[in-house]
Image (cartoon, rainbow, N blue to C red; front, side, top):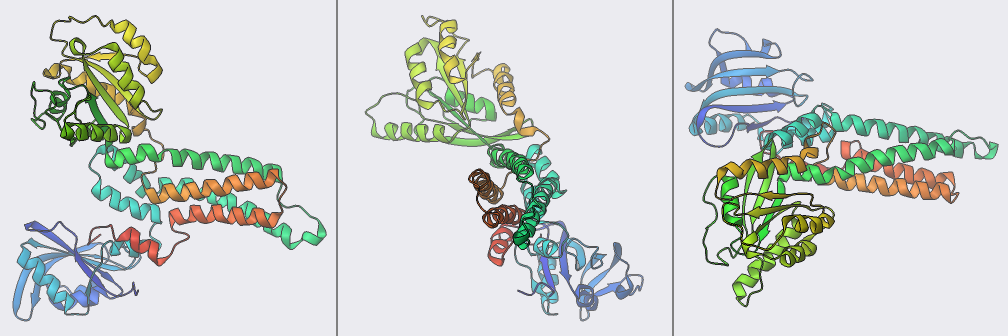
Length: 463
């Protein structure tokens, strides 16, 4: 594909608004736009300086289409690395459509999704992780995701990977140099130093790879399942968290038959709450399917809020449910609901808590899900559990990055095994090259047209 031709797209959201921004970029962007523009002060558009604004009319023939403001960015000083014109016009859909149509008549084509950012990448304005961060920044809907995307767009992730790749490249060149002088029995690459390097690089890659769990949660929302027996107050708690009547609340057991989902943002982190069908044995076919869905949702959750009504539960029931759902990567919040009602149960909280310690539970929250004053108790617990998500370290949010890191880790493990087994330098060099290539795929130093097409096809048009 020719990335030197001239492209155009609307960069503001679809529809009518006060102002719309139309972006043109390419090798001859200024020359292609010039026939349609006349300055109010008679200035010649061809003599405009970079990063300047000029006010005038966008016209075709004798017809003025709109009064516009043009922004000009010279080659190598623009986002794309090519001449770029940004036309700020009124947000009428007719005006937008007409301006685009006239530009297309002058041998300018419509941009494909993400093509402006792809050109910026191909012209060396930033690496692939930064390009992908542009999309993440646009679609960020929480302060935590905004923070991560901004850090990556400024090269935070790139800097981490650049150091690792350069160190591996240095050792690879030393090993390959030895191969060139194999008959002279010289050593340029100290194996002990190589082992230390591989351990250090692998440790960093594993840390980055492991951060994907948190990064994915930040990007898509921390999945939180609300579970318990029928009438334990799950729907009431969901409504309390969302501050709306999202779920039907009823005294009739089994009212919630399907999972009800919605999201909220707490302290900059997005949470996806799922209110599930009540856990109990039942002969009702529909309710049984709802319980199956409940168990499926819990298996995918990062956090489980397990509610119980002390007057309608037994210690055995609670422990049985917790033992069924417990996983090492699942945080369980145990909540006693309906504290506003008289306690007529024989359950002893201290005894229950002692048995729950095996499931990573060190306290039991006590609330009434119909009273707003208890809302902060749940929110503060969620904030405490997920406080690691808002650390200042580099966090991986992209599945493509995760897969490449996993490939790099596998190659590094092969190198470690190879050194222990005394394999030859040429085989070590192959595994080192594989690790370097996997890291290079993340930043775009190693790439292909198909991969780029898949990445940038997910961008919005005009960016």
